[in-house]
Length: 77
Image (cartoon, rainbow, N blue to C red):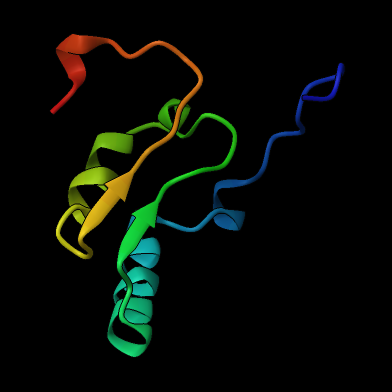
C-alpha cells in the first residue's frame, strides 16, 4: 500500500456486483469455470461483500475469499 494511501475511485468506475456476476457466469458457461476467487487488497472491506459472495456461491465448484483482516464472526454467513 502506498504511504499516501490509495486514491478513491468513483463508483461508476467500479463493477457492480451484478456486472461481476454476469462476467463470472459468462466465463463459467464459455470456459467451464471451476472456482471463483474474490481478491483485490482485502475484499472484505467492500460494502455489502456478503451480497457478492452469495451471488457467486453457486456459480462454480469452489469460492475463495482470501483476506488479511479480521472477520467478525457474527457477520459470516
